[in-house]
Amino acid sequence: MTAGAVPTVSVVVPTRDRPELLREAVTAIRAQDYPGVIEVVVVYDQSTPDPTLADEDPRRPVRVLANDRSAGLSGARNCGILATTGELVAFCDDDDRWLPGKLAAQVAELAAHPEAEFVSCGIQVSYDGTTTDRVLDRDTVPLAALLRDRMTELHPSTFLIRRAALVDGFGLVDEEIPGSYAEDYEFLLRAARSAPLRNLRTPYVLVRWHKRSYFAQRWDTISTALQWLLDRYPEFATEPAGEARVAGQIAFAQAAAGHRRGALRWARHTLARNPKEPRAYLAIAVASRAVRPDIVLRTLHRRGRGI
Image 1 (tube, rainbow, N blue to C red):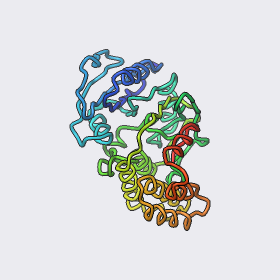
Image 2: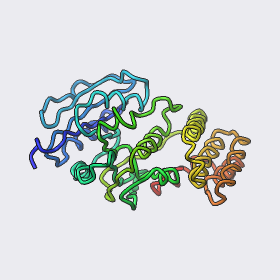
Image 3: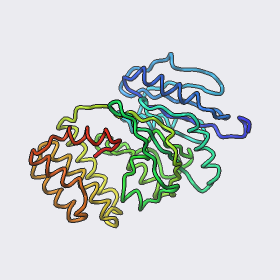
Image 4: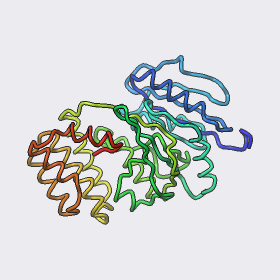
């Protein structure tokens, strides 16, 4: 297969204050064993662009932009998408790294399924010195499955999408979500509304999870964003376990922010939808001060999972 016979892939890399990891991410993208053109579009969000990253190599060009849309990850991704020239668009976060074979396998998957608009793959989660494979054991992901389970294996750095679906189909990344929290999940839900997602059962992306300080304002933003999500997608009412999962996340966020009454109210709502939802019990434990939220999160992250 020659370069002219395969589609150009444009990779959008939003970045902010991670120069060394960014260069590692860009290097891994350009090193993919793919016969077509790979265009890398680096979008600096709330930071000064580094023009030395730019490269006019015709097979692996790198373009450097400043985010001219809303500040944050959603706006930066959309700025990059609109600047792309490829038939296919991929995302990669500036602290993640594509592994060998990723792009060729995904492009082949879309070629084999012309009705599909979107393909993902498995990930390796690196946290606190431990690396865990997270691979979704299914080839297709319909909307109902995503409502039931966020499926964290579907990480943004694995997304490969037909550009036409982004600009003329299900649309760009939503920039209205409070704090841009869960914008990737909303994006997945909207994409799955349009057509079932394809998935490869191989971990082709290394995803780094970092230790962070989960301060009260962040938890308030998480709670607000997830409530926004439930309002935006009434389909959650058709999947009690899925609604309970999101409600349980809201309960935990309320508890971590110190809002005991709100946490208990959302925990009750969670258990009414699904008495087996563990997030409700974790929220109650945090609200009662039996355990600290950061300890819960560190324990989950070591297992390659989140709340």
